[in-house]
Image 1 (cartoon, rainbow, N blue to C red):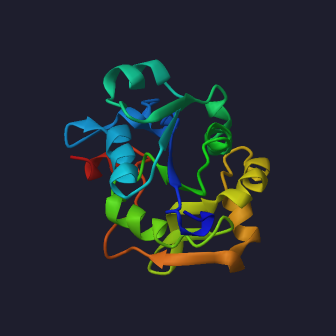
Image 2: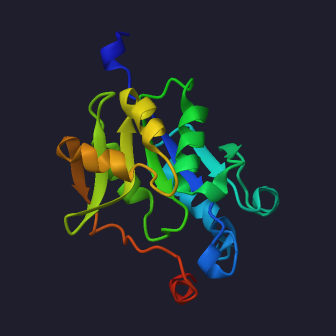
Amino acid sequence: MSHTHRIPQVAGLLLAAGGGRRLGGRPKALLEHHGRPLVEHAARALRNGGCGPVHVVLGAAADDVRARADLAGYVVSVNPGWEEGMGSSLRTGIEALADSGADAVLVLLVDQPGIGAQAVARVRSAYRSRTTLAAAAYQGERGHPVLFGADRWADIATDAVGDQGARAYLRAHRDAITLVECSDVAEAFDIDTAQDLGRLD
């Protein structure tokens, strides 16, 4: 089978390291939604949306998260520098994927439970090559999940500092991004504050 015809491998990367500073220090990964921790919902969204392997980056209370969440079947990394912000977790995830053979990675955040497998599958289907850049859009506004072709990983990791994640990279490469409208299948709210907890059930 020639290289061009194999099914592209799009890995999933779940950033679940945050400490929930504005939630009184409760790790977001362990907030309950439908009776299970958020980290399980998000990891399942990646898997059910067609991503594999699925990598989960933990940070805050990593041992508690491992103990309380069912992460069997996922590759779990712990970002020791998670307090530096999301950038370091993105870097940890990209480094963990470097030798996976994946053609692209689709990145999801643990604190957006309104984004499920349908949005993941839709953004995943925008993959065309190892230079693809794609992102979900909500009424035309760029959001998550975001897909990065493997040829871009090194530059994204270099840019991922502090709380920036891939924001600076995405801004610089705006014209290359395929926006995939997802507002009909997902809601892009974050769980950041005590008020937002009302969106979980």
